Length: 585
Ligand code: PEP
Ligand code: MG
Image 1 (cartoon, rainbow, N blue to C red):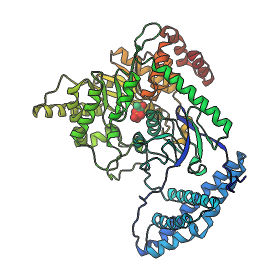
Image 2: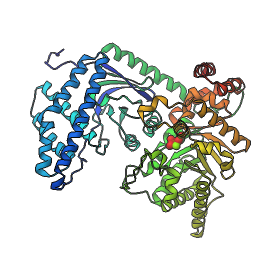
Image 3: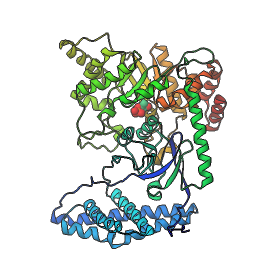
Image 4: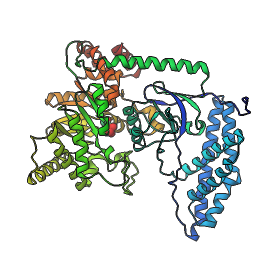
């Protein structure tokens, strides 16, 4: 229905995805431009014109199929106005501006398809810029969205977070997909929430969202094409719901919820200095996970008594070069000094899979999560590894540092990693750098092989840290970043539980400290389960720490033990669920 100015009133609708970071945000949508000035431009040979035109045609076809699929799904959902909206996009694709003009430009300018489309789009948007009619101006958004869809089909341009959020009052970012590197940039910008069409609950993108402590939802599928720039949206990260153009009553209800959540958080803050121990007096260590030195303030506010995981690879992102030894040393030293004597566990760089570097390395694997990742990458790049180990060892003089090696799977990897640490140490000593006593070296248990063959690994390591995010991914063969299989990613799968429980038990038998630093450690619904497994050391994002502490304070180890034993033996999901409810009652 048109409003008093003749512009159509906004359509209110709701979308469901996977809530990956709790909380409620209310704000205006800022669409993350899938295409920026960074669209590639290159010349093609005369003989390749027809091939490039076919590539363009294929992308248009793919975009049309996607739109038809979306139209179909919104029609089933009863949202007829949205169906009409998608139809407009499909019609636009048939317009000569999309169907023909870029093809002609490819021929005339002998340029690549992305560039041809981008040029056409600039021309078109330039014409819209002179239009004052609000209805027609909205069509400019449609044109832009359709072009983005075609560009995405043309195998995507590099996406980058805009230099500044659009609104001072905090915008909500709406994107098709965000890389962890994109999200880390949010630490410098003021977005109050983000939502994406793709992604899984323990993708690094989701993990970084949790560390930002802003509501986030992934796997919405069509948010990027249905939500328009500047529309008012509510993001309920706890429920995984987005409400677009909410009515007054709904808005008031969510503002109330937002206030209640704020009060709840303020209450939790009182626990900051309380010692973490169970009702029956068992002390529990609650440490923090960080990505950047600037996270230290959040760590302090959480009352964490150590850092159990410093994901050092984030120092390597959003740049084309690698950080040198001094730069890394300064970053590690800042964290170590900031923690004032509390331990800092620096994980050696876990590059690869969904965290690539941007140094132009053309390495692309069919299964990157199974490829040259983490310790494999470090051992393949001994100079880079050496630089990092030297930087960590130098920083160890400023406090208590431990080194954590990611993704260990073989005996040789441990032997070589330990040899690399010894080499870095002897180099520094030869250079006259005085180091304190030995720096403990631990291993992440995140590959089933390491969990199963733990006795082989344990003797060589000073401590263990269970990376449940990858352990679940590799045990269940579920890509943690793929929204299409996100529903199968199950921390409560009996195989996962058996592995975690057995790692904790074996570590205790060998008197080796063991922590859990995957997302399971920060999930209050799993705190009692892990305590029942015998875990006494958790490392999580600072934003979750006080809620977990509250749960620890309300738990009796003696009481949860028998229920957890039954959970480990449960052989059907309903029984397991019932026992989990009993455990958390
Ligand atoms: C894990 O795999 O559980 C983990 C903590 O490491 P990351 O999430 O960085 O892969
Ligand atoms: Mg991992």
